[in-house]
Image (cartoon, rainbow, N blue to C red; front, side):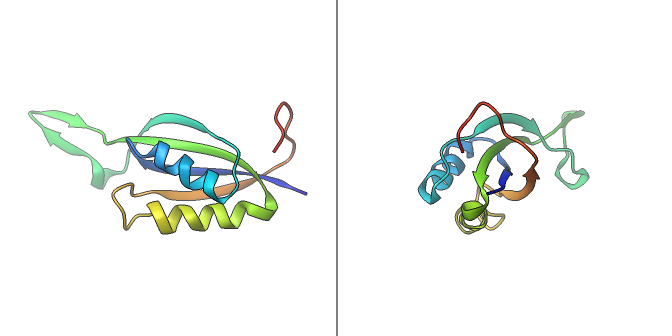
Length: 101
């Protein structure tokens, strides 16, 4: 069975919620990375200082049989219609060594 890396990018402070959602659907764990958005429409000017919105990126490796369920759960519970404002995408992994998925 193939494995996939699911990436979820959300507003700062929501990564723990994202991981909880993923675990409820069968993911075993993930990695949270602090990030910064760079879209021009999100850039604000404040006292002459450009402020970039803080983001978090969650990376979760899952087997193919739960990938779609995890991604759908993310969008339904933390998608752009919510305060988390999460987007998600996945890539197929060629090989995973060091963890059991």
